Image 1 (spheres, helix red, strand yellow):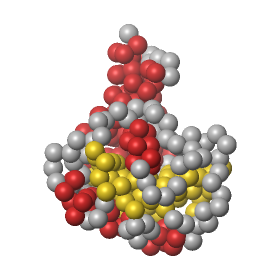
Image 2 (spheres, one colour):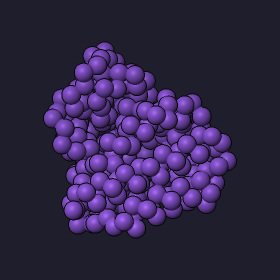
Image 3 (cartoon, rainbow, N blue to C red):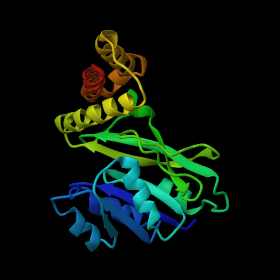
Image 4 (cartoon, rainbow, N blue to C red):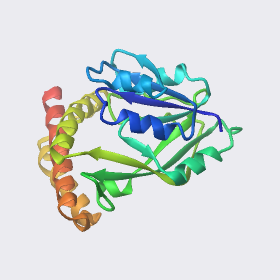
Length: 247
């Protein structure tokens, strides 16, 4: 398959070089879509052979669609700068047939927190659909948790994992989730959803117990506990923001 890789960035100097080098194992056409980095992200991207598209930020979907629009190939692999392609996934991608434009290809995503592999809980069951034909589908424009529009296309899982280096620290990840909580609240508001006091009180508790106990997050040790705790805080925060928006 002739595929182009689109990577969205903002201040990812720490990650971008490794991400591009991994992406070059499946493509010669790497596009970095940057939304105002103030570090060396753009410089490093160009030094590693990527094309850079500078944009004003509107949404994740807009950024991914903008990168796909200037790609040299119709098949697109979407990545974030903190993601790495494994050897098995490289083989799977390189062996895909490109005659079925109505397919979206996905794979499992393996999360790492502070270099620890997360096997259970909410992060241990992750899979993403990131390979698609740009003439058959595109990304929706939700403020956060963007997804490919699936009307008229079929999802297929392929072998291999995408490694997700979530954060070097739980505090850094917490800061990211706080930003995401505001975006998610805006998304829910646009969809007409409302938050009640019940949501604010009970949804975080359910989130914690579901991830830590029901999905066996406790088997990941202290990292599993911290992930469940931060996810519960994120759930509380997004409903709190939504409650304020709707009031």
